[in-house]
Length: 150
Figure 1 (cartoon, helix red, strand yellow):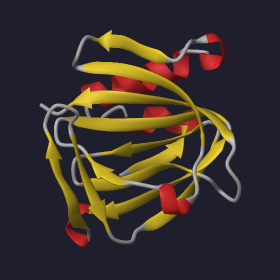
Figure 2: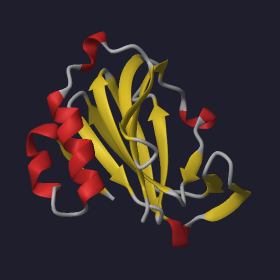
Figure 3: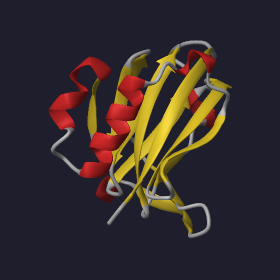
Figure 4: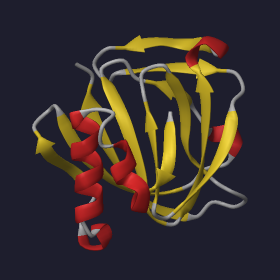
């Protein structure tokens, strides 16, 4: 897992070509006027999902992990909390859904505050719980860039 602000994104370009593509796309795009939906960067290999939602209370959160894609989760507007835990410390609660590429887990992890301009990179071994309220639910605009694992 990596977490930082977009102003430091270039420090992570060497991790993989897909992460470089994702972070460059995030830095080059003003998401204020972009409609929610899917936007291909490199077909199914790298694509962005623009989302708008209200954050949710902790009791509505879901711990998830993906096998086929790395997530770069960028908070474009608003603020949310995200949880993180290494996959080996969690217990699987719902078997892998191959169609939608996720497994659900239960357990405990750390909580991070993610203000606008920050991003987190979650690899397949990183269980994460996004979309969480800091105190009360609030509106968030987020971009999740999906990067195919090679």
